[in-house]
Each structure stands twice: as C-alpha cells, then as structure tokens.
Image (cartoon, rainbow, N blue to C red; front, side, top):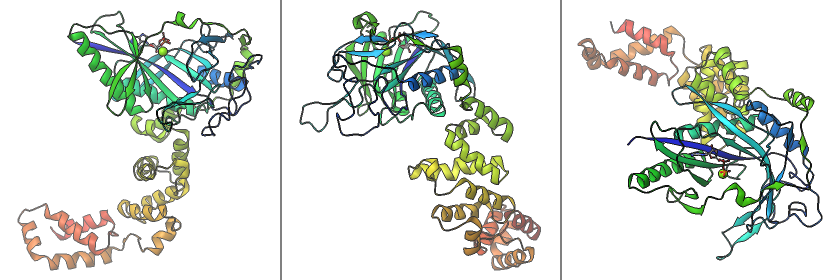
Length: 476
Ligand code: ADP
Ligand code: MG
C-alpha cells in the first residue's frame, strides 16, 4: 500500500515585547525564578488584565504578511485546565474569533518550485509558567516567570506532505517573524516552538486519517526526525492491522522516538468562554492602514529583488535573504565591490563558514562588509588571485589591518610581470627534463605539475591566467 503523509503545524511565536500581554511585568529571559510574574499574571482575585496594545499590532503585522483576513473584532476567551505551571486554572487565549483569520504563505521546495501552505488562523494568547525537572532531586520546580508572556499561535492547514515540506514551511515562518521584528526566533530559549500534527492515509484517499500531535520539538532537525519517526510508526501500526488513536505524543530526542503523553483532549474539555475581564478587541481600517506603512520589505520580495537586481540564482537569493542582517551585509559588500556573484560566493562560502564555526552572528563578524567588499575588489582588479584572497581573508579575520595593508605587509601582490613569470617558467622546465619528455610524449596530466611548480616558486602569486598561457606556449 502506498501512503500519503499529511502534516499541519501549530507554531507558538513569543512576541518580542518588553512587558507581558496583560500586565506591566517584564518578559526578559533568564531572570531569577519567580521574580517576574505579577498578581495579574498569576490571576489573583480582583486583578484586571489590560491588553498590551503592541501585541495586537504585532499580530496584525503578521496577518498582513500572511495575506490573511484581520478580524475587525476579536475576542479573548478562557481556556480552562489545571497544570502545576498554570495555578490560576485557565489560560487567556482566543477561540471563536482570532485576530488573524485565513491566509497563506508560499514556501520554496528543494527543487525550486513554490508551494502554497494555508494559514488557518493566528491568535494571541498568554504563555504558562515552566516546570523544571532538573536540579531538584526527583522533585519538580515551578518557575512562573513565563506566565503571561505574549504568544502568537499560528495554525496551518494540513497542507504539508512530507517532513521536508514541514521544515521548509517552518523555516519560512521563522524567517518571516524575524523580518517583521515580532519574535526573536530563539528556539533554544523557546521563543519559537512547534507542535506537529501527523497522519497518513492511503494514496488517493481524500478523507483525513487520524492524527497524532507531536510536542517538545525545539529544532528544525528534530522536527524532521520526529515526523519521520512518527510516519514510520503509524505505517507499521496500520499495516499490522492496528489503528491510530488520536493522542499527544512527546518526542524524545535522545532516543529518536515518540511516546504517548496523553490522549487528545477535545475543545469542549476546556470549557472555553469569553473572558469577562477583557473587552472585545476592535481593529479599525485606519489602524490596519497605519500598520501597513510600517511593514518592512518581506523575505519573498527581497528574494525576488536579489534574483533580478543581482542576477543570483534562486538558491543563493534564498540563503542571502534568510535574515535581514545577512541580506544587509551582502548588499553592503556589493556596494563596495560591484561584483554581486563573486560577493555571493564569498559571503556564503568563506564568511558564513567562519561565522558558523565560531558560532557568531553575522553582525558580530570581525570582517565588516566594507572590508570584504575591498577584498573582492582586489580580486576583481587582479591585485591578488582568488586563492591568495583566502590567505588575506584569514589575516582580516585576525584583525591584522585593512585589505591593502595585509597584501602589502605579507607581500601577497600578484606577480603580473610577464618577464618575471617567464624566467621562473624557463627554470622549471630546465630543471625537470624527465617530466618535459613525458609531457611531450603525451602525458598531458603533467601540465598541472608545471603549474604547481610555478605556483610554488611564486608562493601562489603568479597570475593564474598568464601562467597558463605562458606554459602552454613554452611546452608546445
Ligand atoms: P487542536 O488545537 O486541538 O490541536 P486544531 O483543529 O486547531 O486542533 O488543529 C491543529 C492542527 O492539526 C492544524 O495545524 C491542522 O492543520 C492539523 N490537522 C488537523 N487534522 C489533521 C490530520 N488529520 N492530519 C494532520 N494534521 C491535521
Ligand atoms: Mg493542537
């Protein structure tokens, strides 16, 4: 039997505000446990939550970027359940009318094709506290600092057909929220979390199969692995005559498995009702128009511009527009050296490799965009070869001066004096009569030997083109 995989994702993006969604308490990460939750976050009797307007603006920004309907009026509801990290017994969320309704995002698949993924809704809600299982000798600690932190829950349609598509969608979303400046996207700190709903059905079937929901996946790699594991598990269960029960499963990264956490709750288990303490949220046309004027260039727009303005292929354009900082860096390089393709190769090659190796942000790069631009300029004007440029790059990275200073100090300037190169070439030919004879007898591979010898003699500084031409001539 051939199976079709169906995946829908629920993503919780923590909104990058200074204060909580319904109170003035700080949202900063990493404070001493239980020092950043106030009486409102804890739902103490008599408190009154007030919506942090910025969270609404951020949600609208997202809605506009996701081509979505923005509700003129949306409602906050109480979702009732008890858990140690939610001592007040309910979470304020949106249920019947979310601020952001139906929309879509386009993702780029590996083969370069575009697929449209439906957005079902995106709603505002508050986060709960955190249970800490380490460091308490078998007991669990509760840290309520996170209670009341603003979240935007973004729910997709079940439109993805493989773990690869799910990851591509997740990355698209991750890039988008950072472009919009509404979420820092830090997955280790839990600012961007994903639950994956997975089901399978016989190929050609139109009815959806029973899904399981996978929780606790906090990296792109784990999303892919968890979904793949779950697909295999479901196929095995069904092919052995069993059925899938709708449940929430926990991904265990250490063992690469998923295991049952709880059977799936239904919406009516939560006894949703409108929060009597919060007014309906009104969004005027004027507010939407005003927020529209603050929208940055979106990832897709930037990608398109990069392919058109710089002649980049879609893969390069995609990588270079994956974050605003990286895109800005690249554009600053091309401003200094008007060599967009060479610049793309250097930024995506040497620079990103060095940045990733040292675990840095592009904004922390010891080589500023201007310096990299100058280096590329020196390749372009034949002062140095591409190979020598890699040596200069290493010195630049160590902060040893400007591009020109390093070239000067290290004596790296390319030898373009034809007479000088000729002298070296003559010497090499004279010193290697055996190789010369073999070459003339048809061993053409030996050409590389002569190039290598000449490069060695010039410490890599011979102009490669001149050297090639000269050798071809002399070895005739
Ligand atoms: P809940 O909040 O209870 O998890 P939702 O109806 O909001 O339920 O759906 C959550 C997610 O599950 C959505 O992203 C949706 O696309 C996805 N989904 C729903 N049915 C299926 C299915 N049969 N297979 C895979 N994903 C599904
Ligand atoms: Mg769910």
